[in-house]
Amino acid sequence: MMSKDDQTGAVTIPTEVSQDETFYMTRRDYALMINGIDRLGHH
Image (tube, rainbow, N blue to C red; front, side, top):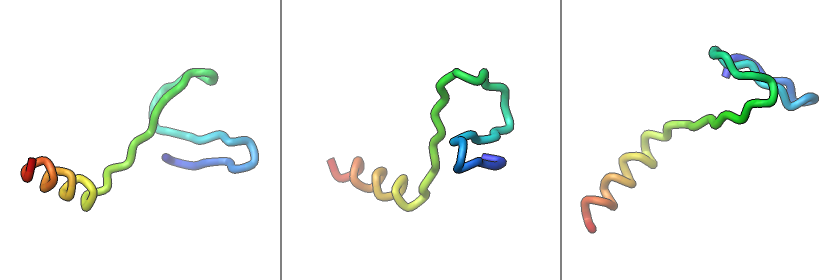
């Protein structure tokens, strides 16, 4: 995310999204990913 405006709830992202379009943002957390892989390996 390039910037955000807490007062209006607006964010600036480096792609094209229409004003009323819904989009989802995800975050990669390396430790959670590794722990999840370890758990899958034990099942």
